[in-house]
Image 1: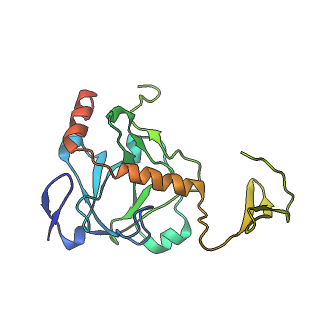
Image 2 (image 1 turned 120 degrees about the vertical axis):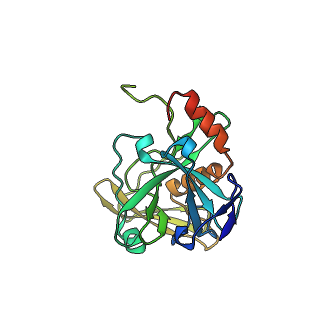
Image 3 (image 1 turned 120 degrees about the horizontal axis):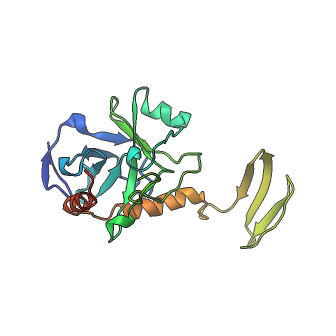
Length: 142
Length: 76
C-alpha cells in the first residue's frame, strides 16, 4: 500500500511493516499505526516513526546506543503481556530544536518494539533516567 | 512550593473538594491516595513531561538537515 509520509513523500509499504501501538504514544491517543523508515544517509542510529494514519505525524527516533553506553530498561509486566514474547527493540523519541546540536532524547520513556508481533508501546520506566538527554554532547573519553 | 509533613494515615485538602492522603510508606516509596472530582486532572509528573516532550518531538526535522549535521560532525 502507498502511504504519504511527512519527510519522504509517498512510500510503498507492506501490511507487514505496520507496527501497532496497543498503548498510545503519550499525547497522541488516537494514532495507533506506524511504520519505521530508515534513511541510509543518516546511518542506522536514527529512524523515523511515521504514522500511517496521519501523514504529518512523524517522530525521529534514536537508538539508545547512540546516547548511552549502557541502557538496560526494565519493561513492566503488563507491557510484556501486551507486546508478547520475543526480542524487544528500544528506540528513543528525539526532540530536535532549531539548533540540531541541542537535540535531546527521552531515556525515561522509550518506545519498545516487538518486531515479531508488530506491536509497540511507549513505556515510562521506573528507573530515573532523564527525559531530555543531550544526545550530541561529547561523551567522556571522546 | 508549600512543604508539609504528614504521618501515615494523615491527609490534607486542596480547595474544598480535593483530599490527598498518605496511605503507606514502603522504603523510598510513598503511596498517596487522592479524592477529587472527576474533572480534576491528576498526572504523574514524568507522564506530563513525556507528553510535553513527545509534542515537541513531533515537529518536523528534515532528513537533509540531520544528514548535514551528522556529516559535519565527522561521524556517520
